[in-house]
Length: 91
Image 1 (cartoon, helix red, strand yellow):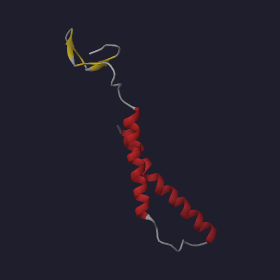
Image 2 (cartoon, rainbow, N blue to C red):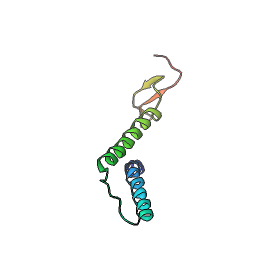
Image 3 (spheres, rainbow, N blue to C red):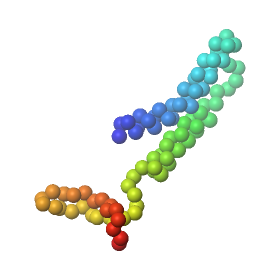
Image 4 (cartoon, helix red, strand yellow):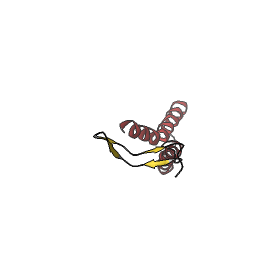
């Protein structure tokens, strides 16, 4: 859970880091700060789009298959067996 949260935060920060690198290069080459407005809104939206894209990618590529028969949780020999999908069985 913590790893996933840190990955999402890192994805959000990537556009800000790229813009920071750009500002650093401009400052070094020209000797002063750039003379234009900063695109904070566009950078913020780019970060949000990266996070949303990561949620969509995760949702499409991870998880259990939907083929098979769902077996609900049950008690077997005094132990709880969690629900699962059994492959190869037809409903």
